Length: 301
Image: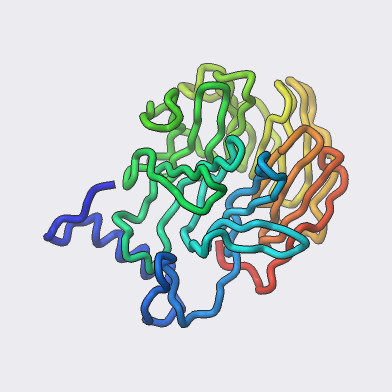
């Protein structure tokens, strides 16, 4: 992102507007040290969840949301390092190594732009480093496919690709993606759930073609090459292999609208619904166990 000069450029006005929007309902007291949080406001909880994952370093489940990154344990969500940044596109790429995008905390005194670009943590979310495109990109989905990192940038509506771990990017096809999926063994195949169906690229995101009429898909994963698992908006868990028909595996409990899906393995899945409740399946999506229920109601998404 651009540095803020002395005059009041358009980027500064945008930053102020985003900060006011995210801070709506909070009092105007000083933020707590290094957190960007209003010290007088009640803890907002996780906020709308954007991503889930398991750290292979210790098996901890993490959830990324509107108000930070959280460790989930015994039904409790603990905010990492008291950081309140809006963490989008969250993905775990190795032991204690997280990638994300998103927005700074609304009262962060060090914020330089409303868009964080690509950020990385190598200490399980305690600290974050800006890798690239600060102020230029807002990745709502990030997936690793072999040596290629793909991201869907909500600002340009395009799939971006990087072959140097996110330090530089190539802008590729436009697609109305709600979620991207890929498999580590197939660096040129990318899937996009669009809400009205599924699209596939076999040329590294340069072009996409519709391959399925499955309606209402909001999240998709490829836990094995050519085998997909997806969430429909109504909470149905679906699967398809190759060009075969979709089959229903199960359904998220309690009827919440589906929001997030992560395949840790082909059998171990994590999901969150519109109430920001987190579930885990260990049988490929057929049955689900409660992992976290927020203490307060969900925020508007």
